[in-house]
Image (cartoon, rainbow over all chains, first blue to last red; front, side, top):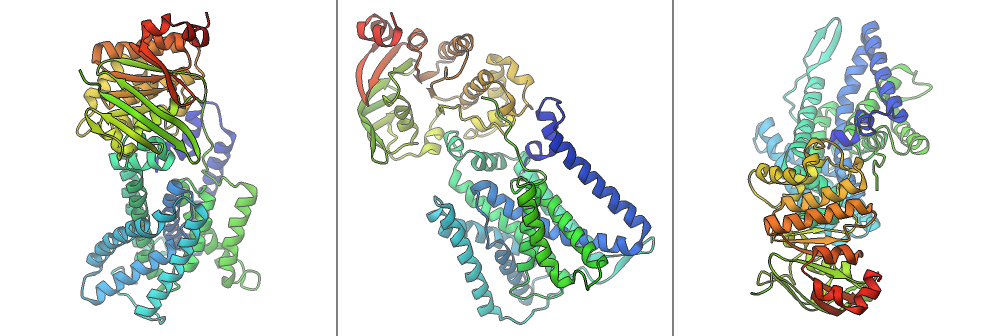
Length: 338
Length: 235
């Protein structure tokens, strides 16, 4: 979570003022994209509406991408069950609300349950096989199937409707309709991400978690309980996933066992775009994927790229990054002298 | 006076490879003890056996307590700081974060410890916000020593501190180790290739060969020993 080690600007500083071409290109690219969006929004209200919608969806992708990155940084493994875990916790929130909890009470309880669930999964099914990357990957795929089955079994495959407190009202900003729902989605995701970032950046626990992720052996030597840190990392990732699930639900209007699957694909693309190791990159990647997919589907006529092609498009982005720049936008290059 | 650290008949192996064949050694509280020997003698493994980063058997006692069933983080919690080969510096983190990690097992404010460390390594204080990986090799070794010292350890395990450093830096490093020992009563077990420097800084030493202790004694005795002189001091 440390922006100092991942942001391109830190790259500039770390190299003692020497201009890093890579970092400069990334900064220019992001700046260009921001200007393009700004000018577009001022020119056209439709464009502005797409952008806001894209940013809201993108923040959800970013939150799930961040969950993937947290696990990846700590263990160099992609948790393929991250999306299904988010789906399960959203169903738990749905159930809690059926039992009479208010939305925000259910929200808070769900985050706590997600933390416990993530931690428990790491301890019970991941830790025993954690020495082998491929075994962990297979276990996460197994979890995907298991969670999917359990949710179908308990709640059934038919869509559920959750009461959302965000409503359908919208603001009118200079002719642009901005739905409350989108603002809430963005707001909740950003507050959650900010809290997680602060935890990593400013607390002793966060420092221990970063150390355990970077160098487990050296971390143990200074007294960090590496195993506990990994478990807590899974817990936090599950919490971020739960936030993503809860915020994704209102954009889909209904809850079904497969509702997080496309979002997981977008989150993969976002995480890879950001550089897999970079939390800031995951978030920026999520927003970029959200906005560009919304704009492409909005503007390119259906006969060229139909909305059915959103998922393959995300995969194409993923493939393109892996081919052209595998370290992504904010990927870390080792800065080290011996 | 009983020893702070006592190894008796310690064996260790990496998978099928037996590295230590029954090592016994003792480190008195407040002393600096050097472990000498050729490459592959088991010097590093001896330190790793103490900190629990290798599978070991036999008896390892620290301050009267058995370490046999204690893992690396538990050993650190008992007040043993291990500066491993390659320093164990978190190069991606800042100098200040590295130091805070050194004091990870301490509760409450660590500002007094940091101030104390900065009095020995004044330049570190100005580099607080710098990424540790951008320090020079010598600076990183000093940082590793400083990080270990923030813990206020009862015992410091120092592995090959001279590795890859310029001679003038190595001398400076051993001077600081000696100073910490004399002023702060820090007990040190140091593994070192440079026998000359190590015996200058140490009170006593052990010579390891092929996983056995072949010789031990005070620094003066070892320096006077013919075989040590020929093999390790080179005169």
